[in-house]
Length: 260
Image 1 (cartoon, helix red, strand yellow):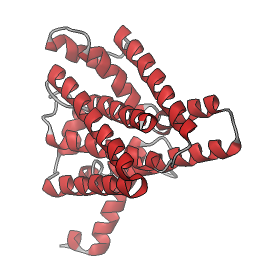
Image 2: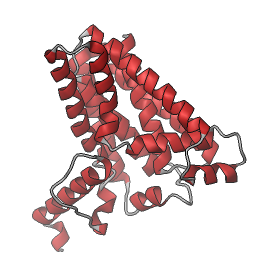
Image 3: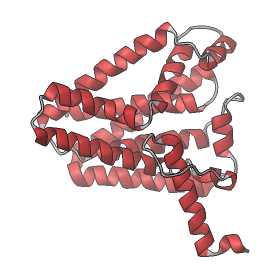
């Protein structure tokens, strides 16, 4: 019965949150913590990690804007922030999935390529495409000098999509990541993530009205399209695929910020 005491449950939630930060964020933490009993809380707290990264993203963008630094240099730094803040974790999944999904090989070969430690041509090409589009989108967005607050919300929504995809889609048999984090999860975990996503969309509308809704919708649609492409090609979801779709979803959100 001890697990039902509020203090014990709160301690468990804090452990799950700390584990999520330690796993999905490169910002140093004071100590390492891992508790197998709290693994099922890591994905629900994944969007909260996105909120921290988004706050850092927003803060750096505002600071560079106030500093008067040349917009091209500011755009380069701001474009790299989400990758630096995660230790390039999701970018690695983006590259691996690009290599596998674009290889036009039989499924067995695609799965082998996905786990191959070597970098293939498709990964290099898609990385160049990503950086060019990311930089261009941020450059245009910063030039418009609009409210930067959507940079906080954008990573939250992308991580809600990522967490839900792992919890709801069929995992690859070889994916220890997806199989591990799905254990002991249920409807309550999905509802919690949906609540955060809806809150993020509502805040997007509150701060930027229709423009905010367009940006949120762009993240969701970009993620969905990327995940559908990768999932269809690789017959399951994994951490790499979730990272691939997350990166593309955030790029679509940045592109929307630049266009609207």
